[in-house]
Length: 482
Image 1 (tube, rainbow, N blue to C red):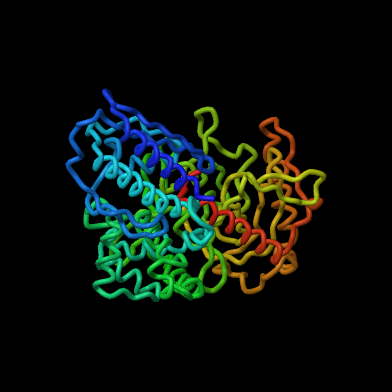
Image 2 (cartoon, rainbow, N blue to C red):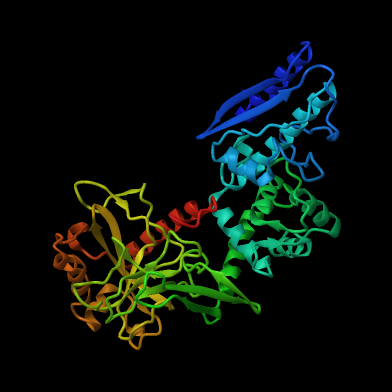
């Protein structure tokens, strides 16, 4: 059976052909709507009365639906809408209400079909870049590859404005282990640069790259081993991340609703604003993990990563328009989160309770138990020791116990048993703090899964990796806020 988009196109074509045989005395509107996954896609075409002039611009012949060659060699639109607006309208399920004013003669009808096919072909590529397959099973997008490519693209983006030029495209492919000749790079760039602006964004690149590596794509032979190379490449990329190049800047005044702590990274002399949640790698090159401190120990202002804001700065949490503090008292530990993790609210977790619990829609929390105070916004390499399965408002809210690798006693602590030996009652103190801290506000005590047991290092690492996979799925579509 034909794919939904191809079937819709055939029906539009057939309707236009039938209309051509009629002696129309007024404009005929042809509307077709098809459901593609969760999206309602609507096509609107106007066939004018007989004798109307043809469209002034002719389009080249249309290749097969699976071919990735561009069918339009200059900026174009459908119904007066730009490419970007078409993407937003069709992929979001909106219908196209704008209509072309130019009439259609016999030749114009063919041009209208050509234009529709061009738009559909481009939208197929756009959908693929978001992990939505509108064509065949051979063109699926591996979610983790999307996240990896996004990191590589950011490295090639020398200006940090989200766009690259043809030379940077060549450098990107060189890094991928797929060097392109000048001719190949120029041809590929022309296919991606549909707006003829001289640069491309990540979506332009990813949609082309995905189909180019499909079984019939022009990079299929070059890219047969690219998935294996990705692992080595990403290990190299993660290794290039240098904490000393990370800095923070403050906007607004502490103690106000407008206060934000923003993150920046010095990338080869170019200071780029980055997201602490998405752009700081979870794993350090020595296989320890990166921990972002939100609330320093011995303080009580409830700072957190703003997962709902662009670039996800750190802000002070609010409730009913007022800034929140921990009324129970100061934190006894450094509290924060692990980057590139996400507790998926659609995922139900078995934590040894009669009922399963959903994720809390945040990065997984970390509790750093070293002797020193970390500053808010600092990023520290930590050893993972264990994890508590706290239940907060019927949601799983993992608390990962960890210690800074720079702590004076870190060499002596590699497990929960070591922690109990060096810092007796530390785990029970952490658990008790989280159990009762809400009671001063008249709320019930929090509960813990697994009977309150703190699970060990291996279980904790497995849980963190699971939330890392959830994060990959979330961000593979380009989503950066929740």
